[in-house]
Length: 373
Image (spheres, rainbow, N blue to C red):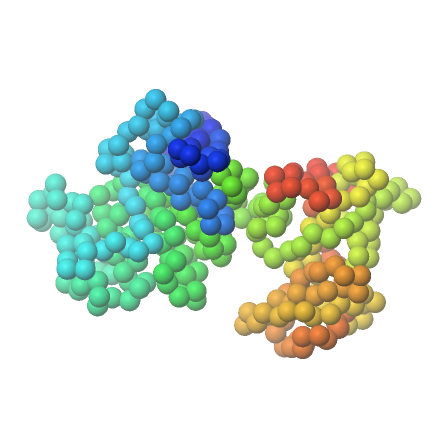
């Protein structure tokens, strides 16, 4: 991966006695100054991968390079303390008996007193905590403690910063806001960072590029827009955003490609696979919540089976008369009751389809541009 500051190539990590690899042939690159995020369900291997980059886990195969230097392979392992990597953990790991100044300056003992104080002031200003040097961790809010942990990791000027679920102990409302703030801090510091989370909103808020992991495999390494609109596998399509798979059939009618779905035909779409992509054109189509529009005049009706209030909108889970389930975002002044039937229509720009009943690693069929003649 030419030009990448962090390069992970075919990395595998096997634990003795484990039935499968914790990390299985993973490859990706991260450019200097970029923020990468690893996301996936519990046990998918994202934290193990982060720990391998840190030097806390040994590679069974493949390699990890930093700035062109191989730091991990099956034959070579540079110790964690020699990698010049900063880490921020989910429990912050602040020393409760030390002041903020001494916590942040903990990794700067090689500097003289004046230089150390100046650097501590500099990074505390960067994270918005200048003037709090004399406080103790218990005197700070959770968000402030998180910034102290970040300042401590940044203080020695690491060449790479690793963050392992750093917001998991914070209130949900605070997480996304703090993720935006931390992104601003990392960009201001010119830091290269790799971040692990299970929260999509955090990932979207902080990451330049996001990797979706499942059962030790990296399914896609891309920006948030591509993950959402052009998922590389069925698992990514299911994991990112709110959506469902509905049975569909792609047909060619009068030189126009039409996708028949339980909500009616999808026509005149920008991108769509050709009918020949599947046997008899039969497939599963991905329908995102934002592909389904609440429309009282629509002949297609669905019953509300679940509703989640999101402030400005509801996320409704709906069941069609034919039994299929779909989801839709509806402005919150449309406060319908569970059990109520509402009109819906489908509005899809580009069609993402998969082989019917395919497994998690299955890729979508390639789209043919401009489905209509």
